[in-house]
Amino acid sequence: MGTRENRYHKFLDPVALSKLGGLELVARLVVEGFISGLHRSPYQGYSVEFAEHRQYMPGDEIKHIDWKVYGKSDRFYIKKFEEETNLKAYILLDTSGSMGYGSGDLSKLEYGCYLAASLSYLMLRQRDYVGLALFDGAIIRYIPPRGESSHLHLITTALEEASPGGETSIGEAIQELARRIVRRGLIILISDLLDEPQRVIRGLKLLRHSKHEVIVFHVMDRSELTFPFEGSVMFRDLETGERLNTDAGSLRSEYLREVKGFLESYKKGCGASSVDYVLMDTHTPFDYALSAYLSRRAGSI
Image (cartoon, rainbow, N blue to C red; front, side, top):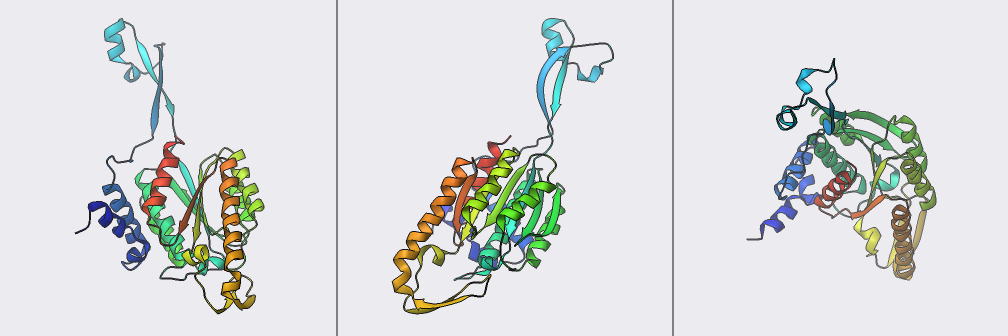
């Protein structure tokens, strides 16, 4: 029998979970399994935060008097609170044509949908607000943030209906989302980032300039990272339809070098902009994503 940790990671395995049922069920199983592996629950309520005391003034409500302070000082002091609204998070999911690629049981889009559903459920359990935006060349579906537990069903339904679309424009989608957001929040981008890195980074900088917290989950298929192809292969661009017949072996070294540079450009660009960057292939257990989110959340409150 394996260790508890090994069983736990198997429970969060994307392929195994994808065979269990709908997105809402999977999201609940992922989060509950993740929480069971923690030593301390991350769930906290964020309604009001104590700020300071001030001396009682005529007209102040008696219920706000701090009687413990009165017992020590024989003076009336009021507990002063500052309202702290719940976090508003926006999940921006890439549904462009390239996200439809998958060399195994799950496409990048399917993986991204499970990831988005799991993060949504976790945030709702934390009493945060969460919204969803699906995009390819532009935002094609937008669900504003809400905090009710029933909101998960609306989000998972939209994710289940998502399908790979056309060409992507991540920078445009980011700018469009930024125009919809009234106050600062947390933006979670889930994408294969197959766009011009500099344009994407500019969009992320725009979000950071507006004081948003940003985390990027860079979802890649394992074959895109390792290039396991042999012999004569026909490659087809899922967004443009362009085809290329070539010998895979002759391309491997150059391809892997280009991919390394591609990933490094995003890692460095995000780091320079104080954006959390998490590379995930479609075999990565979901607990990595949940841990990354909670780490980011802990740093933003």
